[in-house]
Image (cartoon, rainbow, N blue to C red; front, side, top):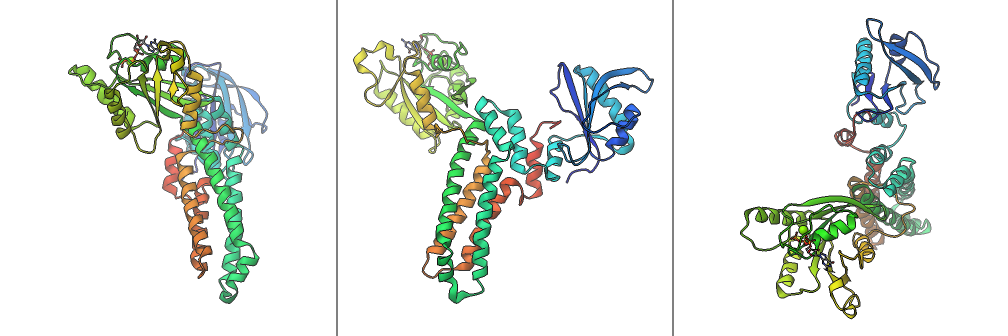
Length: 453
Ligand SMILES: Nc1nc2c(ncn2[C@@H]2O[C@H](COP(=O)(O)OP(=O)(O)OP(=O)(O)O)[C@@H](O)[C@H]2O)c(=O)[nH]1
Ligand SMILES: [Mg+2]
């Protein structure tokens, strides 16, 4: 699927910077280098060179580093040009490279093409390639660490060792298929069932950790919902640590969604403050309230905020409505605000969450409840970054393993079905590291990378 031609792209972010790096990869890089600088470069040594335009005028004095295949990021010959970081200048350098490289088919890289080449040349597996994109997109320190662990191969190693254990089981089962009369004793003596249940528990533990990894990567969409004036915008400001949303004593202050991303204990949270939910004839407010309901429908977590000094039947009815509209799989936290206005004896001892967005009472506790509600465990040391795709593959693999366990438990054990379920489980795990992934899916994954990566 990849063009076997040399490619070029700006590897650093567009815009002004001290240094801008342009990277070339593919066949004929040595010839292109010679065309650019009239000399051959020693691999892995920086050379200070002058790049000139067709009229002999200097474009830039730059540092060039050549990496000979296969000892490079892509596994191909690579040339890195560290230029001065001006957008116009980098444009000129690119233009000159394309002009001189035309003869060898030098073309601008597609998004993710460098990493795709690294993957196709077995420098990294698919989970590691995805970790590169996730490292670049990481929204918190914990996400950086998780992506770095995946890139180092920690996630892939766990997947590979599961695949290996399943392979051993398959060998065992398939070699038994030829001797039906010995089937049951053979499987028992080899402790096939015990080994299978060990593999299942390892897989489920890995799934749990991957679930955390997905939270690290994508963050949580947290929607603040409730009646007007209960303090949703004040809570947003309190969580964000700055005045993001307008707060006034007037009910119906917030008309449109206000979004702010923060991190709680390293977990990225995308908080959406919404227009207070009520019946109104104000056209603008009606539109805002429609958006509030839309936000609730697509939330990962909803905080239904109430004014603890004003608990009424209307509020209970509204709460029921929110619970109905929110997806059934997501948590809805009921939180009581303005606790500073209550007599001290009345708050906090009935298990409900009491806070004051104004004074900060209960906010740390609320943050912990938020993390608990989304299933964020306290043991984060080993968390690797993960994607929806990985979770789906792990789920499918777990289903097949659990099916195979049923076949193995059955008195009339069906070894063929047992073996088939093991194979399917293995296939799904293999898709995580890319071993068994269809080409069109591969293209889709890499097309989401940024250009130059
Ligand atoms: N005493 C006290 N007042 C609060 C607290 N939180 C918010 N308020 C006040 O309640 C009023 C409404 O606060 P907002 O944050 O604007 O409420 P809202 O839910 O965003 O209101 P709408 O945007 O109209 O839906 C303001 O006067 C706030 O100062 C609190 O914890 N304690
Ligand atoms: Mg508001």
